Image 1: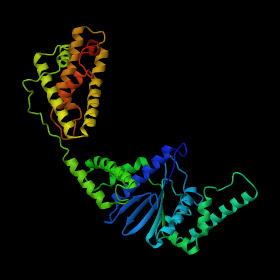
Image 2: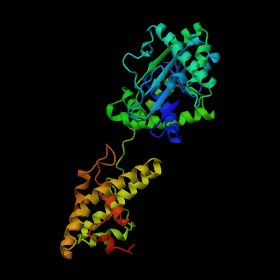
Image 3: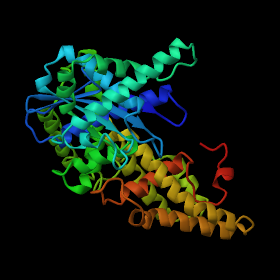
Image 4: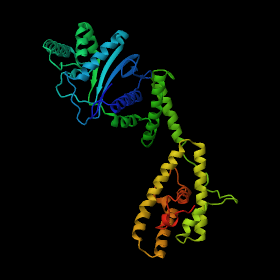
Length: 405
C-alpha cells in the first residue's frame, strides 16, 4: 500500500493508507454478487478478493492530494506494484490469479497503460513498451553508476524494472494478461460514502446508520483477523448476515415513552434547584409543580435507558448539548437585551424562556429519536440541566445562583 499526503510520507499517511485498504476491502465485499466472495487484507497483497474460486490481488495507491500526478509508464507506483506481483508469483498458480492496480491518480487520455482498462484488450504493444522502459531505467542507472554520479537515477524503480526483465517472456505475457488498472478511484474521504450508497437492499434513510455500524464491526473483524482470533478471510455471507442483524437492531431501536403516564411516587423529593431557578422568574406554584414532575419523568427515563443500553449514555450527553445550544440561542440574546433593564422586566423575559422550554421546545427542535414524540423528555431534561445550572431562566441566573446547591 502506498499513500502520499501533502507533507510526504508520515505516520498519519500510513494510518490513512491502511484504513483505506480496510474500507476498500469492505466496499468490495458489499458490492460483490458471488456467493463465495471473500476478502483478506495483507496476505498476498494489500487486498485479496476471492470471486468464483479465483483470487484478485489488489495493490492500492492512495493520496489525499487534490491533483495527484497521472500514473504512467514512468510512475514509481507502477513499477513497485509490478515488483510486488512478481515476488508473489512463486507462491501462487498464475492460472488462478488476477491482478489489479487501484489508484486515486488519473490515467491521461491516450496513455500507454490504457489497454489495462479492459481485461480483454490486447497487451502486445504494452509488453514491448514496458520492456523498453525497464531497459532504459537499467541502462541509465548502470551508466550513472559507472561514472560515479550521485544521486543515482531511478533508485525506486530499479527493483521492479530488474524483476520484470528477469521474467521469462512467456511469464511476462501471462502476468500482464491478468492485470487491470482502476485509475481515479475515490480517496478515503469518499469511499465511506460509496459503502453507504452500495447498501441498496436497505431503505435510503437507514443506509447511513447501517453503514456506520457495519464499518465499526468490520474494523474489529480486521483486527481479529490479524490477531488470530478469527479466520483471515471474511466472507460475503458473513457480512450479509451481520447487515441483516444490524437492520433488525435499527428496527428495534424504537424508544418507548416509559414514563408518559407515570407520576412521581409519594416519597419523591424534587431537587430544590428547580424551584430556586423558577422562583427567580416569578413562576406560579403550579408551573413549579409541573416542572418538578417532568424533571422526574425525564431523569427516570434517562436512568432506564442508560441501565438497559450501553450506547445511550453518549446519545443522552450529545442531546443534552443540543438542548443547551438551542436554549443558548434564545437566552443569550435576551440576557444581552435586558442587561440594564429593571428587575421586573428581567424576570418577565426569563419567564418567557422557561415557558418556551416547557410548552414549545419539544415541538420546535429535533426529537431525541426519530420515533420519539413524548413531550416530557425535552421539558424534563431542561429541568435536569437547570438543576446542574447548565441552563437557567433569569438573565443573570449564573450570578444569582453562584454558590447555591
